[in-house]
Length: 420
Image (cartoon, rainbow, N blue to C red; front, side):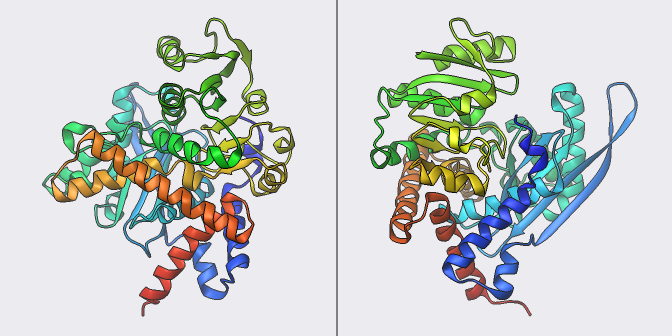
C-alpha cells in the first residue's frame, strides 16, 4: 500500500469528518466532544505459546466508541501495522456505519499486532483464544459483538465464541458474528460486504451516468469484499472487470478479466500477480486507471490529495474502511466523481452481521434468499436517504452519509440524556 498510511493518523481523519458535519448541522459543546471520543478503550498485553516452545508477548486492543443506539459492533483485525489510533478510527467509522443503515448498534473495533502470514494455525488459535479471554469482560451479545476483519475469518470468530462460552459455562452464539453456519452463523454473511457494495453501485450508477453492464471496473484489494464485489458485478450486472490487485501487486487487462479465474489463480499461487494474459500494475497505478467504477477494497488512506486529481473513475465505491482522506474528497467532488463512502458502501457486512445476531438471539434462522432480500432493502433505502441529503444540502455523499448517521446518534444521545 502507499506510504501515506504511515504518515496520516486515521483517528485525526475520523475526527475531522465529525467536525465537518457538526459545523454543518450546528452540533457544539459536550455533544460534539462525545462524538469525537471513544467511550471505552482496552489495551492488553498477553503471552502466546509459539510452535518453537517459546512464549511471545502480543499487544491487542478493543475500543468501544459509542453505545447510544445499542450494543457495540465491530471487527477484529490481525495485522502487523495495527495501532491504537487506527482501532479508534475504525470504531468511530463503525458507529456511523451502523447508524447510516439504521442498525440498533454502536460502534467498536479490535486488533492484535501480529503477522498472521507467518503464524501457524495452532499459533493463531492460541493467540485468538487468549485475546478473547483478555477482552471477555467487555464483550457479549448485549454489550459488544466482534466480527471478522483484516486477516480474521469465520474460524477466528468460532474460537472466540467457544472461548467466551467456556467462560460462561454455556453456549453463547450471539457473542460474535461471521461464524460458521454450523454454530449459529448466517447464510449470506461471507459475501455480504461485497454484495452490499454491488447493490449501492447499481443504485448510484444512473446518477453518475454510468452503465454498469459493459462498464469497466478496477478493484484494489482482491480479498473477501473486493473479490465478491467483482464476481457479483461481473455475473449479475454484466460489468467488465479490467484490473484487480492484492498486497503483492496488481494485474490489468482492458479487454476484461474473469474474476473467478483470477480467484482460482490466487488460491493456487497466493497472489493475483502473474495471472496469464494480463500486464502487471502497482496498487498506486491501479487507482489511476480510466475506468467507470473504482473499488478501493484494501486499507485506509490510499486516495490522498497527492493522487486524487489523477483518479479517472466515474464512481469510487469504498469497500475498504477509510480509503479516502478528507482533503481528497473535495478534489473528487470538484471533478464530479461520485464517491460512495465506506460507511455506506461496505455496510452490507455489518447489516448481515446484525441479521446473524438477531437470528442467534431468537434461535430462528433465515434462508439465503431472505437474507439477501433484506440486505438489498437496507442498502437501497440507505443509499436513497444519503442521496436525498446530498442533494438537499448540495454536499458530497460522504458528508451526506455522516449527516444522516451523526444526526441519528445525536438524537439517541439527547433522548437518553446524560447519566447521572
